[in-house]
Length: 99
Image (cartoon, rainbow, N blue to C red):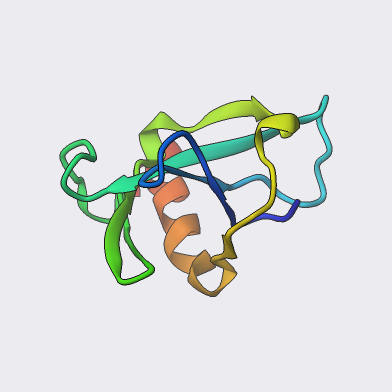
């Protein structure tokens, strides 16, 4: 389990992105945010909801719906998006710092 691992969640079009630091192991949980198709995601708010391309389809990280989930919910990652870490960190900064 690593930061920025992407996991299938629910249906084929729903994912969870692990946003928690790898240095923190807390009570068997991980902080994640949903990644949903742009068409069904909440109204996008710019950098707070960055777009992600997955298998040729546009998705949106719905940062403001971040939550802790049991690690057991997160099975095998389908991808690691650490190459976009700056974009995700900026979204978290906007959520918590306002900029």
